[in-house]
Length: 419
Image (tube, rainbow, N blue to C red; front, side, top):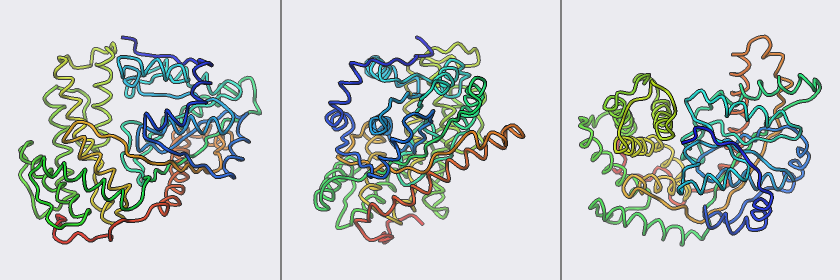
């Protein structure tokens, strides 16, 4: 199995996608509309001839499709750095498809020199444009929350800029901060009815009587039951007085630590954050899947590999659940995020519901302006540029929060919240 998949551009395929984009977006991701203001559309067109990194939040698997639409509005084409495992989806058909629209692979956690070399080459080309997601993989799962940004984008930008100025000393590379906000389609009655039916299926699976609880309390009841079941499964003594978030935290760490211990994963840090543990284990799983030639990788069977992936998915679904996030602003969108985690945890899959995407942008960040600091201290410059990207995207996140409203009263949890 090839560790690296290079990009390609099939013009007939791209033209077909341009024409059929609304149908495919609806068919593949249930995305019915992408909204970009007229001012932002004009701004995007001014960037058409620039070397550019498109840096967006990454709560779902839909953002690359949104980026494709942004490229069309800009009047350009983007390249995409995608996780190597994506190229094997659908028996490789997904890989062939995205490769021909400009995607190339990267192995997270590996010394993927081919991927870095390709990214630098793209950004060195006049008008080269590359889509990168600073949150990395896995997706954050929460539209109104950002995960810690990884420093790789900033470092790549400086490397590519050094490549450019060797022959074009006056040129620049810019980073375009973008934010995608998803809004559920349908009336309040339709959305509440669909949520009711989806929760009813889960409650039946778990043997829960919802009684006359509102939607928010029903979500919390389901979460409590799943929490208690997981504590039994992973032999964790409940510490009732410590509260919900503490207990969920213990579960996510226990799941990940158990995987690392059982499969004898070297280099695993038990003392780091759960998301860092998850990223590390997923990178190991991906390298094993593509048969990456590294003697440090554990020797495990195909069944063990599948078990590892399932356990990591369970941990991810616990990592992406925060009670304050839901009860403080219980919008339909946040409820659907929790619903997705519940369905994936219980049934192994969850489908996107009809929604639209609102895309907002901040002014571009010039690498040229940050390069003097990079010459003084590479580490500090990379850290500052990464922080600036996150600040800019966080501004957009805050601006977009009011695009959705709670569908039940915030904090109306009664006795259903584990204190």
